[in-house]
Amino acid sequence: MSKKLLAMMAVLITSATMFTACGGDDEVGTPAAAQSLSPQGYPIAQKQELIYNLGADPLTIDPQLNSAVDGGQIINNTFEGLIRDVDGVIRPGMAESWTVSDDGLVYTFKLREDAKWSDGKPVTAHDFVFGWQRAVDPAIASEYAYIMESANILNASAAKLASGELKVEDLGVKALDDKTFEVTLSNPTEYFLGLTGFATFMPVREDVADAEGIWAKDPAKAISNGPFKLEKYALGDELILVKNENYWNAENVHLEKITCKMIVDSSTAYTAYQSDQLHLLESVPTAEIPKLIIENSEFYIMPYIGTYYMVMNLNNELLQDVNVRKALNYAIDRKTITEITAAGQIPATGFVGPGFFDADGNSFNEVAGDYGIPIQADVAAAQKFLADAGYPEGKGFPEIEILYNTNEGNKVIAEAMQQMWAENLGIDVKLTNQEWAVFQETRNHQTYDSIARHGWIGDYVDPSTMLDLFTTGNPQNNGGYSNPDYDEQIALARTTTGKERMDHLYKAEEIFMADMPIIPVYYYVNTLLAVDEIEGWEMNSQGKLWLGDIIMLDFE
Image 1 (cartoon, one colour):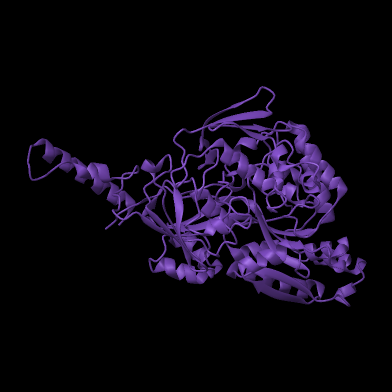
Image 2 (cartoon, rainbow, N blue to C red; image 1 turned 180 degrees about the horizontal axis):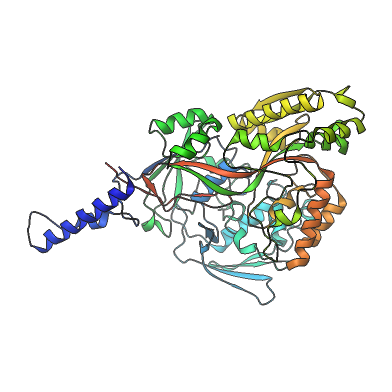
């Protein structure tokens, strides 16, 4: 039955009940039906339980240690930062209000008096101080420590913290009192406020957290301050979230339980969805997408600010030659790959994709251009680059490896690139896959041989969220790229504003793409299957899924 028909029936039922009640018939009772409709006019189900496929078992769900989308989805719904970005609009989160100094350097946040942790203790400004200091603490080794520096928080320099020149206590944050949190920036930063809703900026309790993040997966210790809390964690199987009755807005949270399945194989997950075992599914089998676009109203293609790419290990002597890197880039057909994936992805000819804008409101991606990278393979150019590197027609070129995390889509792309390089360059490519947690460790520590699958989703809507990754020593710089000229442009972008700042970011990407240490493949879109029986889910352009407003509907 369609939602439209159900809504009409609900209105008729509600109206009939109201008229009968006004007639004074004691057998009819009060118009309860009017109170059991969702904001969009559909009947609300008595059982408010959602089953969602998280996909892989997250490496961590510790706010300061996480760097992956899957872990971020859990953190986004179990924790809450100073603000919350649900649908592109910044809303008060733990902070009910804030002020900014005239010079744009000092932000003062007033926390909600009724903000509590899931165990009933108050959320204080001291919890934010601890969480943010923990993020930059070299002893914690957060892969996202750099984002505090990207946010221009005073004394967040990773290099100075690592050398001991600065201490974590020097970070520009302080608790003025239990409910007043102050942040001092080194430079005015247009995107700072939006960043405060990101996982790394979540508050954490000092009496609960441990350095390894073990606490976050233990229901007995996993204290959180968002709409849901962890009730169960079954390794490799599922985790269960339940409503946090101590959340400040708990009265408006309808879901009582969320079961997050860990089904890695997209075909298996899709079968579970078809058999009504899942309500919400992000990873959809590539082969099913064309049919779903045409036939299934529950299938959504969402904007997603990010890039799917291959990172090259520059510790490998072979890949230190820019001609080899260019040959590999020019020999793949990005148009064909996006036709294979078939979900509306855009062939990538740079690293910063659509959805980012400069100070004049222009698309950063369009102004930057394609850096000469072909959408379809330029075989002649690729072969010349390889010959210039000393491997004419691929002769003498050693076998290389593409490492990817286990996933049907990643496998299809790796196989396509393997074939393209064999046909266009005459080189041999080995494919290796690893499970997600193992793969992250391999890639992050640069222990892969030559090429590894990668993808990056913007954490905020500014080009710096993409370009900051490749500064020297950044933990997310998994190929070991380093160029002082690039680092200088990024540093200058952090100390300037407006057009001047954007000019430095344009120059930085120009330097980066001339060095070509990665193989951009496509700019992301998000695919998602959501049954009609759920209302109120939100996914923003950073791919963050918000479940706090979901209402389960009753269509029977």
